[in-house]
Image (tube, rainbow, N blue to C red; front, side, top):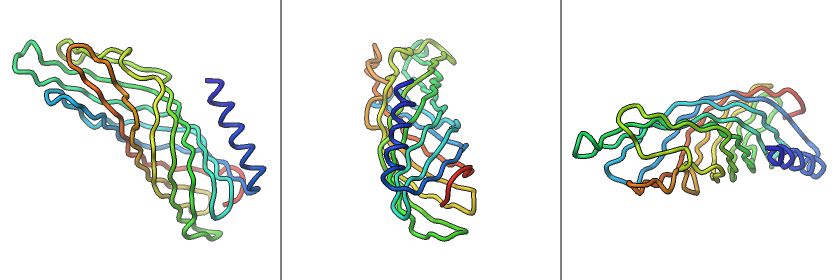
Amino acid sequence: MKKIFLFFTIAMLATQLSYGQFALGIKLGYNASKLSTNVDTIKSQVNSGFHAGIWTHIGKRLYFAPELLYTMSGTLFTSEGNLAANQWQQKVTVGTMDVPLLLGFKIIHSSVITWRIEAGPEASFVVNKKVKDVSGTGTITTANINTANWYVLGGTGIDVLFLTFDIRYQYGLNQFVKDVSNSGLKSTNSLFLVSLGFRIFGSK
């Protein structure tokens, strides 16, 4: 965890020295996550969660935007076997520390309103995880959840005075759930995120 904060701090300081203009804020939002399945008899549901953390914008029209977020996500897996004994439901819940490293461009930029687009990679580290049997006995355990994951994400945002509003989609690049015994289940994670932020330092 210390390495995450150190990396985030170094990235902010280095880019601030390079580009000069700097803004810092906080954000809170809703996310809907969906884990894919490669097994026809195992289905997953969209799960609602939240995220919160800090954001930065470093640069002017073209800017670098590293962030540090805590995200709660997960899904409900359902096995639809032919036999009742093989049917089960498991609730998977994870909390992650996420480090998006975004490059953004301000399409419209004024002292009152800004419209921007952003895209880039994200490193995600699982800090807590839980697997709960809702019905029956499932095959997924916490050991099957990958602790370090990579995403690519993109989206758009609008700033009005000191308020920020973001809409993003992020797609998992590696197996989030893997090596599940007896089922061969493999799963990647994707999220849709909406957030409201507040600029506490710097200029637009």
